[in-house]
Amino acid sequence: MRRIAMSVAASTMTLSLAGCGVLNATGSSTTATPTKGNDITVGVLMPDKINTRYTNFDYPIMKSKIVELTNKQGRVDYENAASSAATQTKQMQKMIDGKVDVIILDAVDAHAIASTVKKAKVAGIPVIAYDRLAEGPIDSYVSFDNELVGEVQARTLLEGLGSNVDSSDKVVMVNGSLTDPNAKQFKTGAVSELTGKVTIAASYDTKDWDPGVAQKEVAKAIASIGRDNIAAVYSANDAMAAGVVKALKAAGVTNMPPITGQDADLDAIQRILSGEQYMTVYKPYPDEAEAAAEMAVYRVQGKDIQFDALTQDTVDSPTNKDIPSQLVQVNAVTKSKIKDTVVADGIYKISQICTAAYKTACAEAGLK
Image (cartoon, rainbow, N blue to C red; front, top):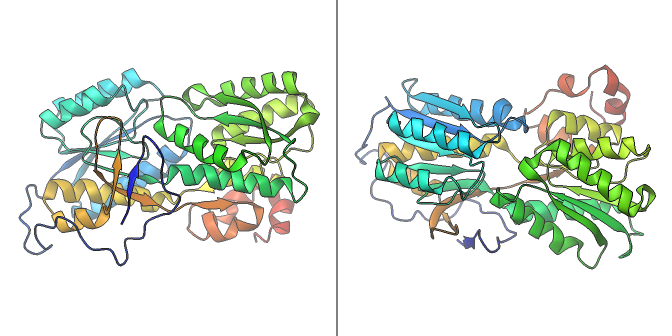
């Protein structure tokens, strides 16, 4: 096993649960005494509606798994903060006041939510940090190896530049929001791969991961660097990549440079097919969401062995150390890998991807 200090740096290896021992197990699945039965309420707090994954994948998968694990007796109280930290604080406080049994939290602002996490702790409500590591007394955490995500994005971007890539080639970086601890890790991983191989000509930390803000940032970079001098654009996620493409098109660019992304949004997959975006990072949402649901149910039901088996790693936040965690593997998706990733995993059907505008591109990519 390994330990990861998320506030400093993450290892670039991912963890497989196979072959690892179980730590701190207090009983077997047949002998452990549950603290709660199946009649439980799980609060689920998602951060925004800009990224379609939360509504389309994360929440529905969690809900389905919670229902399955509780023999259809468990309930889910769901809220989306629409990118507002203040709204999320109110939503979480409402769940605490409503005495939910456990909360799965994907924080808008990892620092701002810490005091409310403390309130949940005082109320005896475990909080599972999801996707983003919130500060405060978190019970466990499930996400991806975020520095590795940035490294994968940057390495694939360099591949997109080809064998003639030169250290003088100018790259624009459109990073995520400073309120999201993952954004710093994505950026750190990407910079570690790009440094010395290309020139980072401009770098932006994009408020709220807003595609409109990203579009303005790239327009500013174009004005400063020149549209024909931008060799590639590192975009930390797919929503912002859409803004990047709009800015380049507005400047008259017709042959897009390599542009990265993350989240495997449907429109990003289609942009990859059409050549407007070079790659995205596919993060297996079913694995992450199901793990969070299992952690939540097992935690409140006192099923310690199952909980410990899911959390073989530990991470540190700026406020707490040794948080039991699980990190899930990621995959780079370029045009040739669409079929073996998001299609093979059932995230999208070929019919969803290959609408009329993309029929030719789909045929060329072997999506039939």
